[in-house]
Each structure stands twice: as C-alpha cells, then as structure tokens.
Length: 303
Ligand code: FRU
Image (tube, rainbow, N blue to C red):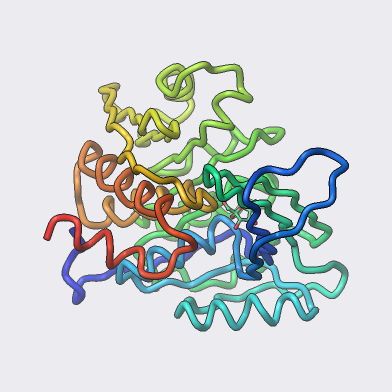
C-alpha cells in the first residue's frame, strides 16, 4: 500500500502547529458542571502538522513551514516535531503572541472531540514562505487560512515551480477563500465547510465548486457516509467509510484522511483507490487513541 521507500517524496506542509491539551472524559459534561478528567495528554496538534506526522509515518520526508511563538509551548511543539522527524523550513518566530492552544474534550463514550481553540499569534507571512527552496519538494500542502498571504504563496509556487503539485485543505469558511481554489491540484474540503456553505451533501458542494477549479481533483469527506470526489472531467466517486466497531478518538481524523490522499496521489493511485485507502487510514485512526503506530496498522491491512 505504501510506495517503495527509495522513491518516497519530499513534502512541504504550510500551516499551523498547536498545543493540544486533551482531557479524556467518560461522558460529555453538562454546562456549568465541574467534572474530573480520567486522563490528560498534552501534545502537538494542528491540521498541517498532524497531516505531516502521518505522512512521515507512511515513509514520506516532511518539512513544516509555519509560525512559532517564543514561549514554552513552542518548545513542546519543536520537540514533538523533532521526535516525529519533521524538519522546519524557514519558520517565522513571533514574540508578539503565544502558542496557539486547543483545549479539547475527548468523550470516551463515542470518541467525539470538542475543541476550544485560542489564538493570538500572527499568521505566516508570504515573505517567510518565499524563503523556502521549493526545488527540494515533490509536493506542497497548504491550509486554507490567512487568505491574503496564502494566495501570494500559491501564485509564487505556480510561477517558480509550475510542475510542483500542491494540495489545499478547506476546512472552515473564511472570507474570500475561493480565491485559493484555482491554484491547487487537489482540494480537500471538510463536511463542516460544505454545510456552512449551505450544502446538504458532498456532491452538491463539489459540483458547485468545480467551475472555480476546473483542473483540480476535488474531495470531500463526510464522516460515517464515507468520502466523495469529483475529477476534472466531472466523474463523481464515492468510497464508503471504513466502519469501526468502536470509535475511540476522532481528533485529527480529517487531517489523517488528507495525509492519506496526498500519499496515495504521490503513489500515482487513481482517485477511487486514493479515496478507499484514505478512508481506511482515517477509520483506523478513529479506532485508536492518538496517532502512534497508525501507519503500521494501515500497512498491515492488506497483509
Ligand atoms: C485536529 C486539530 C487539532 C488542533 C485543531 C486546530 O484537526 O488539528 O490538533 O488543536 O485541530 O484547529
């Protein structure tokens, strides 16, 4: 299922790294109650850095470009990135803010994750990104955020390295985010984005978006209903979810799915196969706590 270790790709991920304070609760608390967590974990999170950690487990070489605060939280992030063998590429160090922190309730009953996120750190600037040597990479993955800066990064990438494929995660609706769509070869939409944009199904979103990105492969994961995709020629694909008897931890399932898509696209798999495999990876992730050993379980699936 993975490609040969000798032809692993070098991937640059551009987005956030956060401090995740995860409290494990036996059930979701009532408002204005006082409850005790049965366990707590403090770890590095953030969509792009989570995806890179999975890609690294799958054998890809991964660099991260993003913003770090100058505080103790960022030390935890640096150490975790180093442990996960993710290198830094021209990170922007900011003294004017604190490490973005997520306070997460992980409900052990159903694996749901409820995130309260606090952020006061400036966003990654185009100038920092522009210092990365793009000739080193076979793929670049972006988060759809800080639109005015990210659009310049995408334009720069397409001017400097027109053959270098890139993917873009569209997780949250943000003012003007459609301006990013035309630049990526692979667009990864969340169900949250689709619903917040007034769509009741993944295919409704994908068909509506296609005129804005006619040459891209468009993908939207829809939780228990699996994942949908549409190719440039307009053919729609669906792959059912990889159902698990126990959902233990859904934190980062979307980031894991995105990593699966990038990994499978790099391996040259068709959209249908990529969807199927990425659902399996994301399904497996939901059946375990955290990410440790995930790629090994995935690689064992087909023997
Ligand atoms: C999971 C996650 C967490 C992080 C939050 C940021 O998808 O990346 O690790 O705290 O989302 O929005």
